[in-house]
Image 1: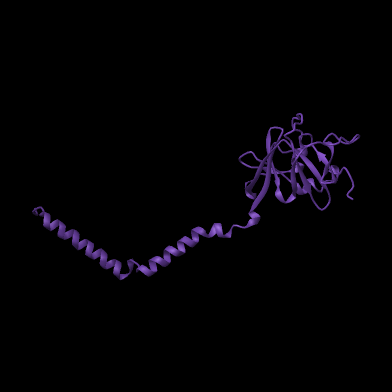
Image 2 (image 1 turned 135 degrees about the horizontal axis):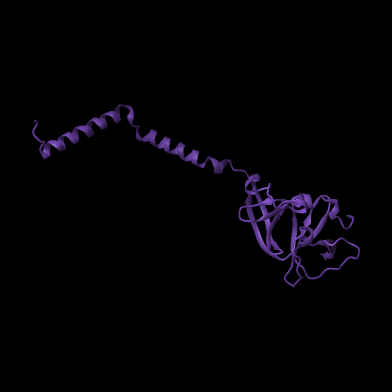
Length: 202
């Protein structure tokens, strides 16, 4: 039966193990300071790669607004301007979604009610309503807005297109809905739909 090691003997064994470990590091298990820094730099580049590769087309910049108690957005590239809705002139014989016409800096544009177009509950108008003027190659018109929320950036892949509640008219004019329940309108489709044309372009 061997005698128990004394305190100084145990410490000597620990020092010997540490010495052997340091020798193994020096023989190739470790790296010098220059190589270590190079590895850290490469790792940082790999972590940053997804952000560097992210392109502008991965995002949608949208004008956010509310209508019928719901939050909507539409691509900012389709919005010419946003104005308070002072007054409009009704047009007889037009579809229910057409409120009338509005003069915008001397230019006449039709005013559409998205609440009717998207089959949302319709409410009355107030002096706090706004109008977003949409402009495209084929037509131009105004959309009635209840409130303007400002602009936002939304990832394109965050817009869910295949949803059970998107059918009929909603499926026709909507890009989809985000997880935050922000409904994104398809501005290009709105501006190219002949059914929304009220007046011929001058």
